[in-house]
Length: 430
Image (cartoon, one colour):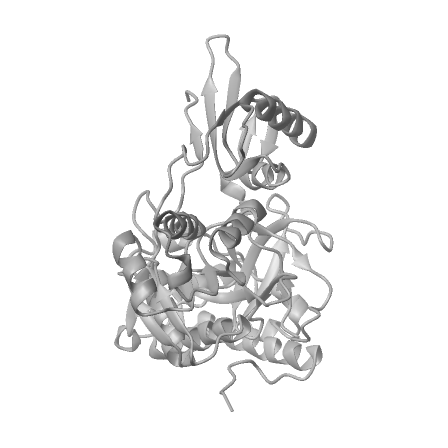
């Protein structure tokens, strides 16, 4: 019988009791071990003994990315340096990177979370997992490999890029699972078809991380190479790394590991809980993290809690896919737009593919202008670009209440990426 990494809680009450004990431990640990957290709690008049229920989490102060940056290079460290077994860094591109420290227990807990993800996706020890995400100080490659090895499947730690070698290993080593970004998944699917090797590989599943993908992109990838399933894995460097949640084969939402962290979804302006089912900012509080515990950390990621239990029977709660980031919001002619809204709208048009670009510019007349570049869908025998442009323009006007210019191009004309695709180009003057 294969080993399970799922928690053994029989009901939600048991899980909440575990969360409360974890919350009490985290607050006490942070208060006694971290000068930053002790000062932050004292400023709002909170001590560890004031935490007696899960609702008391709302009394605690928030932690932000600035707290991580201001404490560089070891922000919020809550253990002696001798207990730090490893560091990882964020993939940020401005200023100093966020560096997070890990104890050995943190690493072991992360591996368990990730092994759960593989189990949730229906893998077995007979699977072979080709890992095509970044290695180094990033949490991606190491996390995927760590969880795979604990789970017991065979890891093929290839990293991103090198399409020739990716295809060679798909044929020679017969991996059944590919872990990558959605952009890399699209690039690989198109390359597999172009090379005519679909019947020579054993790929059954892809697990996407680090990047939002539209329904149109996911379906296109499945159609190109005959995949059985695609899964979305979530996580961030601050919260161990990837592996803190994944959707199950029912695909009703992202199961997140609520025995390792508490998830609040708050209005990013008022910092109050949003109504059930509404979109808000993810705020996380860890329950077991030793080196760098997080207390009400504002992730800036946007999602919504899914109120109902999953039909798969697992009691782990769910949130929706990451819908974007609060700091990715585009303000265009006084309208707030998230790229994910455009992404979702475009997925409803059958004549276009999954790749697109949003170009923002400032005209000589003092007004802002938006141009939306889209690709026609692969396989269309006759392509009427003008008709596509009109359909997209009408849809965007109806769904987002803004006007935009639309440029329809032939399939494959927009750039592909081995990591994350850049889709928003804001060229407006300051």
